[in-house]
Each structure stands twice: as structure tokens, then as C-alpha cells.
Image (cartoon, rainbow, N blue to C red; front, top):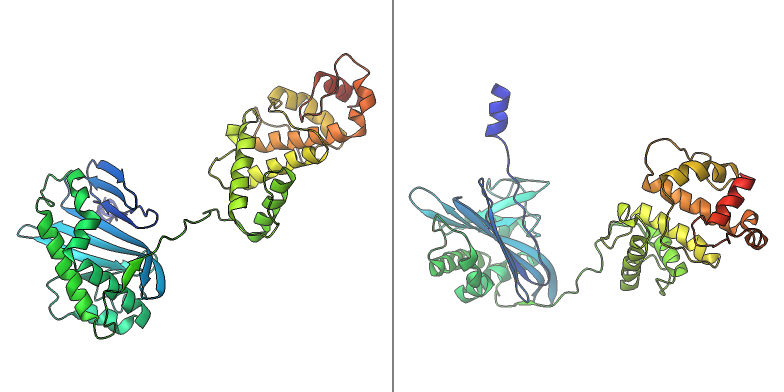
Length: 388
């Protein structure tokens, strides 16, 4: 019972923010009870609000394409927090060493919390009249990071900018505690904190008006694939005429488009939805399927969308195995046909259709002609039974 109480007392909640493309601002209040979710998307802004009867609202500003002077910094996240206490409402700008891309740690964040995995936090508010946290950052951060932070703070010190970023979205927030009932005050409170931040960093970074944005190209792909696998993918896609670029082990737009075509091809095979992820990234299983189809393509015939079922696997699989078209490790246990066994069966059929057993002369022997389509026709089944 004591252990259960400790677990309940020290249980941590995980806050998740959504980072959108180009220059996006994500609002999120992370609360304990039933949540309401509001999402809207503009040209350069994506807004997601989670709200219920909680006492705080977190607003995440994610700067992408951030340029300070001639230096392209890229991706930086700043959190604005509004928290209700019994006697007052607190406003804080929270920096995270990981999300804000700032290299401070627990020794220089004045007890702001966090950890090395999720990032250390430092809190900026209007009550820090001694500029303690700002001075700590100014001493700890390299000059280029101070320049970036001063540029961001200088930008947010203008209430017009804060209103431009977040003003239109407050109307969509379910706010029973009335935390957002006075937007103008919110803009002023956060602008005041940002102004103190910019002023405290002035000694190291004199300018704060040199912040701008560029339209960064969207990531071509988020697929986590080694260069060796990318090279293997490019080869099979080119064999299947789904990729016309060079085999360079680079994840370029041609490779990405080819992987999508490959998944569409696999989805067209009967039962394909069982093993196709349709996320634009080829899994090892999908790649193996495409390699099997590539072997058929090289032999000059096209695979149909039909696939043998479990009963055919149990009947004709052992024959294909005896003739050497299935690996000796292939087994016939279980009561259903897994994606791996189905792929191995497809590979075995392709090898059989390419072999001497499935010859042109054989197609003239019976009323059931051979059809080289990666599927056992009636004539091929007769031939397979004769040799198997």
C-alpha cells in the first residue's frame, strides 16, 4: 500500500507538443481530466489546443527557418506558460536545452528542473529583477546561441508579433478558468518578459532586430534507413521501373517517390494490406517482397494480384520444397499463412515458373496452359504434382 501511494504521488505526466512545418506555433494545455481538442491550420501556422478544467495553459512557439543575421539556425522551440495560483496568475517563458537548441545544463539553470534525456529547463519571468537566469545563460551559452536567443526575445518583446503569432487562436480554446479572458494583458506580460531577456543579453549580443525567416525545404523523408538498405532499395526499384535515378545510397525525391510506388504495387496484391505499412518507408519485409517481384520482372513476366492461400501452401509448399524452390528451413506449422511464409511461397513459385519443370513444352501438354504470373495455374499445379 505504501509503495502504491508513493507511485501515485510521484507519477509524472508527459507533455507532448506537435511541431509543424515552415514556421508553426503549437498551443497545448496539458491537463488531468477529460480533454477537448481544437485544431486549425493556416498557411504558415498549425494550432493544436488541448484544454479542459486545468489551471495552466502551455503555448509552444516553434521557429523554423530562423535566420539571425546571415546565420541560419533553423529549429527552435520556446514555451509560454500561463498558470493560475490562488492569488495571482503567473506568466513564464520556459527554455528547454534540447528543444530550444541551447547548451545549458543543470548547473546553470538555477534549479529549473528537467533532465539530460528530455532537456534541462530554465524559467524566465518578470519577477527576476536581478536578471539571474539571464546572466547564467549569458555566461554559459556560446556567443552564437546568445545571438539567436536575443533575436527571439527581441522579436517577442513586440506585442504586435505575439498577437500576430497567437492572437487569433485564443477564441478556439475551451477556457472555463478564464485564463485567456484578457488577451491584451497576455501579450503584454510575455512581451515584458521577452524584453527583459533581450535586455539582459545585450552585453554579448547588441542587436535584437536581425531576426528573419526563410522557407526551409520540407524533409525529403523521415525514413530511418542505412545507406546499404537505401542502395538495395534503389536497385530493386530501378529493376521494377519505379526509380530512374542513380544508385547513390542517398534518400532523394526519386527514391522517396519510388518507395511509395512500391507500396502501392504491394497493396494491389491480394492480401497485401497484411504486410504493407503505407507510410512511404519500405520495411525489410516490404523490400523483400519487392525483390521477389523483381526476380519475376527480370524473367520477363508480370505478377498478378492473386496469392495462394493457406490450403494451397500446405498442399503445394512441400512439393516446391522437395524440388529446391523453398528453403529447407521453411516449415508448414501453424493454422494460418504468415506474411513471411506467403512471401517465401511467392519466391518459390517464381523460381518454379522460371525452371525447366515449368517449360514451354509443358504448357502444350494439357488443357490448362501455364501462365507465368507468380501464381500456380491449374496446369502448373498438375505439372508440380507430377514432379513433386
